Length: 397
Image (cartoon, rainbow, N blue to C red; front, side):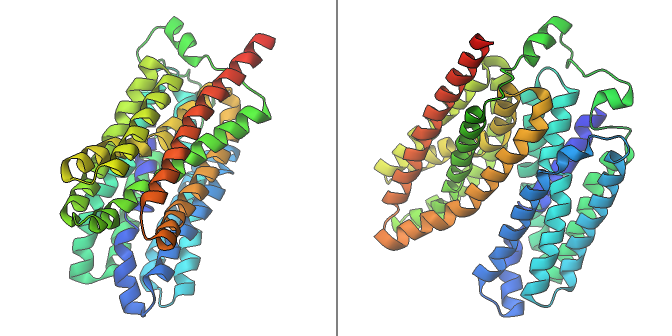
């Protein structure tokens, strides 16, 4: 329980605060510093890129000498960099402090949290991972209105100080509770989540693939999935082009709900149906939602499509964790998952700009929707193919 609480706190701060509340700062900062909003938006791209790059180094914390000191130092730098943003008076200082806090947050971010969970929990890993990762959306939904109120009352600089205090608060359990990178370091055994040892052994079974082809396919699948998670950003402008602006606002609300609920449901599904079936089911539903949005431009069908497409956040987050854990050995997880996470971050970063360029070139969102539908089909095909290759490897051993 202590491990779960600590990892939920880490995800809440490093994703919930760092990423999911970033958007509310763009407009007030741009107005005060007399900059274009697009230039301020780049701060999120910088912090996310540094976050993903730092995640590549998270496996180095698998040492009892470094784990807790790294948590404390990175938390202080992360919170300090966030607080320092309140003193920024130029774009360059905004970029610098976002790079610093993004890198510090990435070292102790979702890569570390999901790796620790995978090593501590042998069964119900999907449910536990989804619970931790769901905190990012949950905290984002809570803190967005809080920080917006602070911005209106005291300005964006004060809001960054509040964010820094929240980061320290959320990371406090990880810094104070007696947890470690792996249970063996603490002289404990991994937990079977209340199940029997035999069931635990069955749950721990993976393909233990060492194939470069399997790894590249896994990276591509999750890159496509992360690219697809840019679709909800189209809802508001797309609904306006259809003359249904109010529908677009409701669609965004539905997506926020599905972001959290979808991850939780997906985690339970992976524990009951397996990772492969769960990804295929979610992929099929998302593809059907895209097709519905492409073909029917009326309020109710568009709201239904939003609830279906809103599941897209589950695959590149919980899905990536579980796919990596099932295809590769637990020991290789810390090496492979950071690469998958980096590819997903980059794909998500370019997703919205590419979809926007398609609209600018064609004057319609039809081409963008067709592109993401094709990528969804390729992602589903990739899942089927990667499991077939991994199974063939098993038979050849």
